Every structure is written in C-alpha cells, then in structure tokens.
Image (cartoon, rainbow, N blue to C red; front, side, top):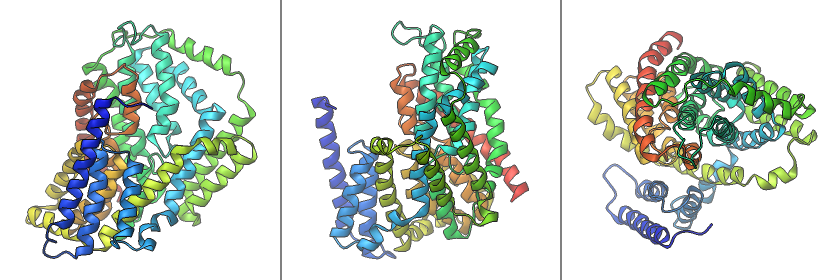
Length: 471
C-alpha cells in the first residue's frame, strides 16, 4: 500500500513526537507516591497509546515496540510482559474471530440478514430496523464489531445501490447514507448487548474481577437488555428525523432480499452445521456459570466442529491475519495495563481523581465518571485501548466513592461500546462505513455525537434504574 509523500512525512513527524513524549515522561522526576518502575511503565504505555491516537503507527506496531522496550529496559520481566498470552479470555476472543469467519463463509450471516429484510424491509425505516436486528441476532458469535460490519456492510451497500442510491452519481442521500449511519449506530447497541459481541468486553469483565465483581454471560445480557431494547426502537427513529433518507418507501427491498435468497438456494449443509454450532455455543456460554464450563474451551470445541466439517479450513487460518494481529497487540496492552495496576500506578491516579470528587454523593460521582469516560473517547482510536487504559482507574474511583461496584463496572463496560460512534475513528468498524463514500466524516461528528448523547442519556436513566432493580 503506497502512502502519499505528505502523509508519510506527517507520520514520521508524529512518530518523532511520540518518542519525544515518551522520553520526556521517562526522564522527568517520578511523582511523589510512585515507584520509578511504575512511572517508566506508564511512559512506555502512554506513548504506545499516543502513537495510535496520533496515527503515528498501527496499534500492532506500537504494542510490539512498547513490549520490547519494557523488557529490554528491565521495566517489566519477560514473564510479566508476556503474561497476557496465557489468558484464556484473550484466546476466546481470537477463536471467536475464527468462528466469525465460518459464519461469513457458510453464508449463514447473509441469509439471516436477508430473511429479516424480506420480512420488514418495505420502508427505509423498516430497513434500518431490519439491519440492526440482524446485527443483534448474529452478534453473540462475533467478538468484533469490525468482523460483523464485514457481514452487514456489503448487504447495506447492495440494498442502497439496488434502490438507486449511489455515491458515484451523487444520490448517496437517497437511502445509502441513512442506512450506513443506522448500521453504524446499531453496532454500538449490538456490541453492548452481549459479553462476546466485542473484543474488549471479556477483558473488562476479567478486570472487574479484581474488584470482586463477577460478571457472567447472563448477568451482562440481563443488565444491558432493557436500555438496549429502548435504544433499538429510539435510535433508527431519531436518525430518520435528523438524517432522513430521500426515499421513504422501499417496496423493492423485500424482492431484492428474496432474489438474493433464491440465488443462495436452499439452506446448505454447512449453514445447518454453522447454525447448530452457533446456537450450541451461545447456550453453553449462557450456562457456563452454573455448569462450571470454561468459555474458551466451549469456543475451541465449536471451532473444532467447524474444522471437522471443513467450514473453517487451514487455508482460512492462513488468511486470518487480523486474528493473529489482535492476539499480539491485545495480549501486550492487557499485560501492561494489569501491571500498571500491580505496580501501583492506577491506584495513584485513582487517589488523585478521588481527591477531586471527594465529598460528592455517589450518584454524582457515578454520573460524572460515566460522562467523562464517554467524552474521553474523542481521543481514542480504539475502544479496547481506552478500556485497557482507563477502566480500572475509573472503576476504582467509583468504588472508593461508594458507587455499587457491579453497577459502576457494567456501566463503564457498556460505555466502552455505546460511545463508539462519537468520532469517525471511534471504532474500526466506522472506518469501513466512512470508506464507502455514503457518509462524510463531518456528518459522523455531528450525527454520531447526537446518537452518543442519546445512548448515554438512556443508559444513565433507564439503564441505571434497571440495574438498581436487578443487582
């Protein structure tokens, strides 16, 4: 991939800036109350995060560079630095990435989406609901909103083009822009609904365990269900009002879906196997707490079935570079985040924030931390990077201020997902929709900002009352 000389120049400047920031923090005096080791690890960790925020380097590159510096300078032992690779939940995420490939390859994801569109797709608003419903239905088996957009985006693209809404001839606003924005907004909800619908979710649940908060698959889904259902009905309707399509009726959409289903033919053997495996895995994940089953082992078993039936092959594994890349950077940043906490850095930051919120009642602290966490996403390219950097700190502050630990943990984890549309780069899935040409970056800042506000408002009101009832 060739880069424009101007872009390369800018990237090199940003890389130099990141190294300068890292050196400046490393060599500045260690703040009172902190060990030098913790301060040096913070210098490396924050530089890796800044490198991603400033687009100086890819998250994989910055993580690999960070871990090598951490070990070579003696800031972390090799055992500490590579501890993330032994975490079961990280393997769960990677295996689920591979299973997602099976859902795409078998055609099951496409068929589900087209079946829903055939039933509810007679109007542009109905189409928006259909796309989001399809997303929510398949999301438990997709631990990546980016992978899901890989199923949804081509369908939305085809529906737009077949309805006469194209980027090339200036008709993007006929239908395509509205559907793309709806699907992008829908991803913030589907990712919030299920523990396995986004890569950061299991990591956050694991980190919450450090505070004695046990988040099971069932508890997550129950706590998220009511606010997500409210938003499922609200968000497409709001988008229809503030970002309306020129075409209000889409009588041809069910026929387009039917034609696509006719082309696909009868449900294939592979789709049946994929569906049975998918339902079996989700059922076992839901019951994993009571049956004392390891979620990662369930995922491995599902993958084994797909490999035995040739739905997922070794060739697919070779093509799945994203999964390996995710495993590497995620394991590295997770280990660094955990050890920042173990070295006392998170506690130190927490104490400083706690002194600011000292004296406020817990509902005020809870609301302030949630809103602060959502707004900080303006500065993050990766939802996962934000969660790894800030989740433990914010949770610690909330718990110390008297916020119920379970409620604070769940709200921060939900916020990691429902804030994703706040900027064009707020999620890697957004980049796919933006790249289509149907939506412009400025529109995401404006419309995405409004949707993020609505998501936050509903979760802080309806979501909080609901959690107070069930927890």
